[in-house]
Length: 412
Image (cartoon, rainbow, N blue to C red; front, side):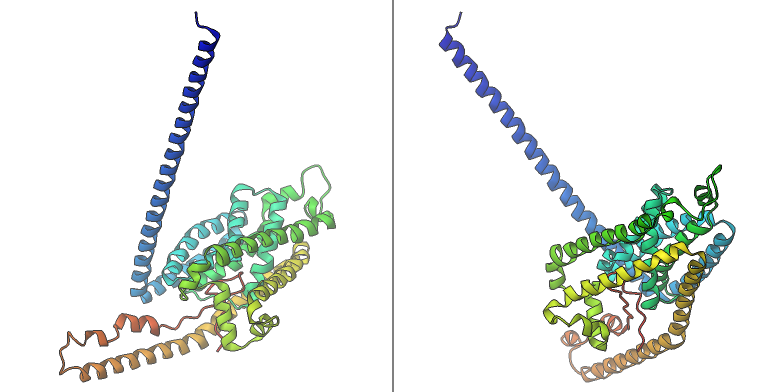
């Protein structure tokens, strides 16, 4: 038999030992979690480095075989365009699935090319954000009318008008321009097809045993119409704008300051606008040079609000929808012809001229250092690989967060 003092001391010692075991277990678990996080972070860094290295290799090989790739791109683009036109007329219900297939093929290839060019921050632009939502809607929520109307507003609003205002070009031998047209033109055609031509959605619009109605229930109420075609999409756009600002201007700010070659929409648009001294540069400087980023966001917001408001009459009118599709396609084809007949010849002449000048300078320099020790003079020569990279004229085309580097055709 234990006395009261002995029993209480035994209980205290047991309590302390149990508490120590609990603390030890918690410490061990926290150490395991920390080690696991460290291992996962290292693996993530290694995976990122491997992917970047492979992306660079693929992009370099693609540049080495540029002409052959352009020919293959032209062939596949023409065949793909014809196939899509056939689906549009014969099987409109399959058009959304064709779009999803093209998206999962084109966007990763563009990331590989843009990662090599240091343009990968363009993939944070609004057009990719919207296209990702389109993919989710078509694959996971194909019958959700509210989600459909939000996506319709994005596709026939900012993306569609970016296609027209910033002159995207349908050039079949340019993979970059084909993808730019794809991410801006194709979503509108997909949602136009679902809205007016898809027989599955016709059944949802006109259910059996009920009087035939002109459209979905949400269209009958102006409140619902403006809510899901304008207000909710505008909130989703503001969410993207906040995330974009957080990532590019806060989290990755030091990375962008350290490397001026890394391009973003704002950086490229500012450079082009300042060089041309156009209306965008003058408008963005209303509040002074220190507030150009703020004015950039404001102008982008005004463009988005205006184009989203125009989606309401387009959604209600079949004739207006058809006219808008023809207008978008005609604009891209016209811009493509203008690029092939006017811009591309000037680019080719300029490129060949710079190459010939570079070779002439190299020859003169080689002759001047011939009597000297060639090994000691090696550092004075500019590597030919650097010359060819610098001599390549690049047409960078951006729309204030709604577009990317291949969307604003050079007009000079």
